[in-house]
Image 1: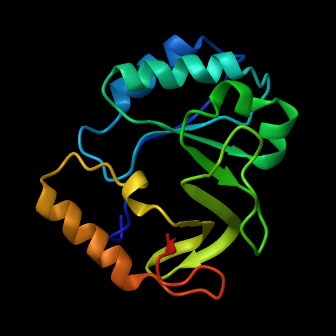
Image 2: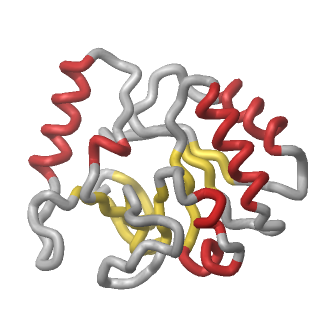
Length: 171
């Protein structure tokens, strides 16, 4: 993985099967050891917040700490914050300055600001993300010294930005 942190990511298909069925499949395929918390990508129709809530609850009940990924317009159009605002949010919003969190969230743990970026050592283009809360994203299933080492490596390699300073982590 070119030294990049990895984790389980599930693209929700609410119209294809139940939240329980998709969560069970996701859990059965979730790596036993990961560096990032599991993520539910919830931005496909039908945008039923109860479906996403159930999926996240099943994953949490299995001992994980999932994150909800969605984009600002979808969160707003489907009033996701009313039901899902208690879950940590990874927000997609392609712009050059950090957006305000959608209604129902006071913050987000990660902001995807581009889908056309490049990363040294990784071929092609991909998503670019930033966080001010790396510990919230890193939930290691490995011994503590490796977790500290990984966070230190991320901190040491993180560029500073005019708007965020050195505490903003790019990945």
